[in-house]
Image (cartoon, rainbow, N blue to C red; front, side, top):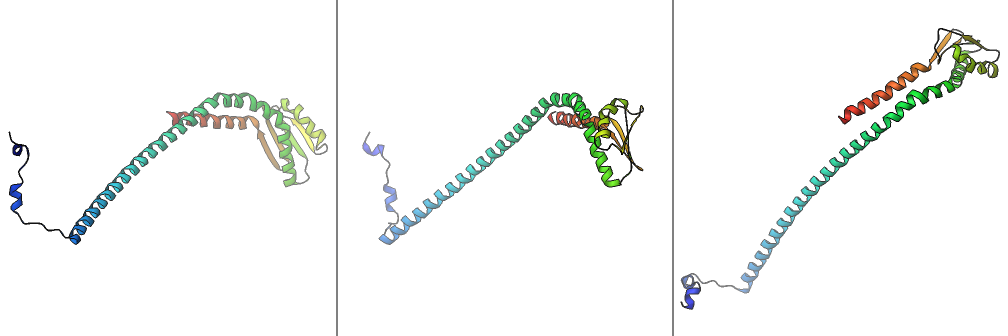
Length: 195
């Protein structure tokens, strides 16, 4: 085996048109090659940037969805864990607080009615259980104007205030039932959202 068998023969190509390169044409070829390479690099860079931007957008979107989902889960869990505490408060603490505050609530209503309605006597009808708690109102704040009337038809926490022709009813039990219903509805809605 000779050396010529190992290498390709370029002899047939030598008989074509001769190429002549001058300094100007060589510079034009180089400049064109540079521009072509530069443009190819720029196109690759823009394509890579678009791809990276899409990947970042997709990742950011996924992270935001995960955070939102995690926030909703955490919120639902916190609300669910508060349910027993709030239920206990509505059933045991609020009725006691409301009963203790009954004289203050009645006093505020009477003062508002007096401001709005003049110099009439105030008649206060209440359940027998509430008369003792309300007795201090008559002796302390309006000794001449307040008349306490025991009304067996009213339940504890129900009070009727009459000033002249105007009358207001206060029903702590109904108010507590509304609070209990609102709290229960809130937690039931939260349970539905979790499901």
